[in-house]
Every structure is written in C-alpha cells, then in structure tokens.
Amino acid sequence: MVVTVIGEYCIDNFIYCETNRLSPEAPVPVLNPVETITNSGMAGNVIHNVEVMYPNARTLGFHQTNKIIKTRYVDKKSNHMFVRIDDGDSAEPINLNISKTNAIFNSDIVIVSDYNKGFLNEDDLIKIGNLSKLSILDSKKKLTTEIITSFTFIKMNEHEYRQNLHLRDLKNVIVTLGAKGCMFENKIYDSPSPKETIDVSGAGDTFTTSFILKFYETKNIKESLIFANEMSSIVVSKRGVSTP
Image (cartoon, rainbow, N blue to C red; front, side, top):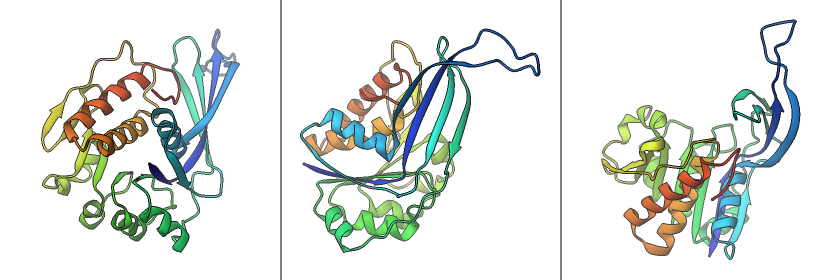
C-alpha cells in the first residue's frame, strides 16, 4: 500500500512546567520547565499515524520547505495549557510538477491535511482530488462544491461544517463531533468514551488517517467510522500530540 500525505508540516513542542507561585510583577503564574517533548505535527502527525497503524505501508509526504513551529507551555500536573506560541505561521506554495502528480496518481491513498497557511490553493486541491484513486481532505478553507466533489471523502469538525452549510446535501462529508462521535449522511456514529479526556491535540489527524486506512482495507464506511472513533478516543486519553 502506498499512502501520500500532502499538506503543511510543523514541529510541535510541548514544554511541561511546574507552577507553584504567581509572579510578583503581574497576576500570572511562574512557569518552571521540567520536560520538553517534540514531535511532528499537522501533516507530519498524519504521516506518523500511518506509520504506527500500518507500518508496512510506503508513505510519501509533500509539504512546505520553511519551518512552522508550535510551542505550548503546559502545567505538567493538570495538563492545563497556559499559552501557545506559533513561529512561521505561513507556508510556501506547492509546485505540482509532473513528479508529484505521478506520485499522487500512483498512490493507493491520498490524504490532504490543509491548514490554509498558503501551501495549497483551491486549484491545487481540485487537481489532487481528481488525480487520486482514493482520497480524503481535511481542510481549514471554506470549500467549494468543486473541491468537495473531487475528493472521495471530506472530513471536518462541527465549526467547519457550520461555515460550509452548502455541504449538507453532499454525500461524502464526515463531520467529527468530539466526544459525541461523528456524523455521516445525517446519521450519528457514537464514540466510545475515553477513560479520561486529557488532550485533544492531533485527534482530528488520527480520525482522518484511521478512517481512510480502514476504508481502503474494508470498503465499509460504517466499520471505518467506528474504527476512527475508537482510535480517536485512544489519543485524547494521552498527553500532547500522540498516536493510538
């Protein structure tokens, strides 16, 4: 199986801190870093999910060349995030040359993780969707009908769905509902309750990846949605951006 992942890549830094007092200079906590965890985020997290769930798959990735770094300062005891600092919040555009289009056409699965930071424009998305055999798009853009119909599946959260109400009559849109599970063709698929919701960072990446991998394997939408819910419930019970 060949899986191509296209989209913005970032470095996720989680700086876990002890917070035992307030600053005398202002009513803010003093953070004492005790542990730093760094991992690949955004499209990089999608690739990591593929590698963990299907280690025998061949994974290709296309992303921007400039760095995007997200640094979170988090209380180690409570997992409360105090602040997130983003460095390099824009991405250089992709050049869809012949080598990339061949890779897309020859892939079994194409996953697009579009954070709307300038890497992919609307024409890029339509071309990628039309070139792909089996595809799924997770995008922060307001999507046109032409973009949506070029992909096999579209994944979005509730907020994104409300911004795209023209999608209601389309049959390939999956809406994630957090702890409630997900919705497809107006039917709710319940999510198993995690032992404890600790961190939702990266849960959408896990849902998208696990759904399309299971669908490639089974061609069964219901089974794939249930599997994606299960995998997402695992990652939200862990700290930081994690995999099942």
